[in-house]
Structure formats: C-alpha cells, structure tokens
Picture (tube, rainbow, N blue to C red):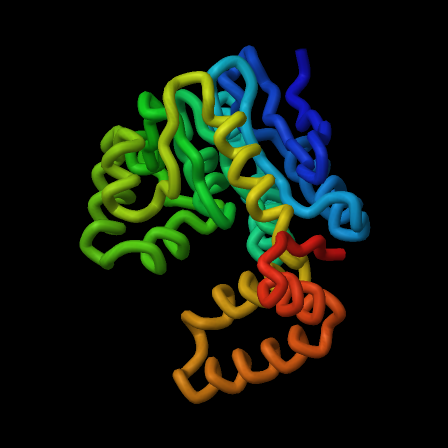
Amino acid sequence: MPAELQSSSQGQTLILTLRNPERRNALDPVMYAAGIEALGVAERSADIRSVIITGTDGTFCAGGNLERLLANRQQDPAVQAESIEGLHHWIETIRTYPKPVIAAVEGAAAGAGFSLALACDMIVAARNAVFVMAYSNVALSPDGGASWSLVHGLSRHMAAEILMCGDRLGAERLYALGLVNRMTEPGSALDAALCLAQQLNARAPNALASIKELINDAPHATLTQQLDHERDHIVKNLHHPNAGVGIQAFLDKREPRYE
C-alpha cells in the first residue's frame, strides 16, 4: 500500500493522518505535497479553524524511509536535496499557517516524525509515546527544523543531548521539559487533541492568527520591535468585529460566538 496523507474533518477541525503502514508511517514526498495542498485549502475555508496531524495504527511517524535514503546515496546529491526541500516547505507551511496545528502522537515519533510534531503549535501525546531524534544513530544530522525547534524550545545543552545522543524519550520527560502540552492514556491522543481543538475553535480566528504570528516573530525581534508588533496586532484586532462580540459577551456574562 503506497504512502498517503489522509484528510478528514470533524466539526471545524481538519484531521491529517499519516498512513504508511508497511513502514510505520514513514514520511514520503507524496505526504509533503498533500499536506501543503490540504493546508492551503483549509486556510481559505472559514469552516476549518484548526488542524490535527496524527498517524494510523498506533504510531505517529517513524521518520524518513531509510531504504529510500540508502538508494538516494547512489543518486546525485540534488535528488536528496529536492526531497528535503519538499519536507521543509511543509514544515514552513505548518509554522506560518494562521490557524492552530496540533500533533496527536501515539507510539513512536522518530527522526523527521519528531521534527514534524515539533513544527506544530501544540503536542498531545499518549503516556506511552516515544520520541527520538534518531539521526545521529545512523550517522546523519537533523532535518525538518529539529535543530531550530529544540534550540528555541530548550536550553542549548538539552537540545545538544537530544540531537547528539539519539536517546528514546518518553512523553512524560518531554512534558516535564515543556515540549508536550498534554498527556493522555494510550489510544486517546486524537480524542484529547480534538477536545483541545474544540477549545481553540471557540476563540476568535483572527486573534489566534495574530498570536501565532507574534510567537513566530518574537525570537527574532528586539523588545522594542515586539512591542510595536503587539501594538499593531491589538489595534487591528480591536477594530475587528469579533472584538465587539467578545467584549460585549464578557460584559453580559455569556459565551461569545465568533466569526
């Protein structure tokens, strides 16, 4: 069965499911292209307010297909570079996508699968989920933005340990480090992610888009620059119809309904 990225929806949440059962949901260029296309369609749809990325059969993603990587060693380096560019385009699309993206992780998230989870805005993981930056275990360096995500999310020393040692890390360890947002019982990661998505879906989409943009900008901005960005966003959002809805609902002690 060929690798594919299955797309479905539940309420206002798009669910993208990695499916490559013969290779524990290893990533494939077909998935990158499908993921970019699906997010593009969902971005233009007012009916979709959040996205969940998950895997089939109790596994999130085993990372890259090592047999394909081995075969690419016999090709011109440009062949592998093109493949990596496809993955990186998908990672950038997730990071800049204006709606919340949640990873629902069961089983293993290895190598580029771990990178993919880190690219999401939040991670919900089963207690028995295992995360591993497997690159150094096969004499490779990371891709998929792993070095960027870990250095921005952790201390330099912890990022170095995770990337260089290639140890298996449980969900509880990553929860303690602040990389996993919520833990759940095995088999319940998608349901828990849907509950989180429902909470986000009830909030004003324009405000969440601004928050995500501010989070993305913050590591590269000075305090003065970030204060300017915050000023511009809050002024823009104050004059959006949703602010009138939200403020009035708060004063009336009722739940708002945002557009």
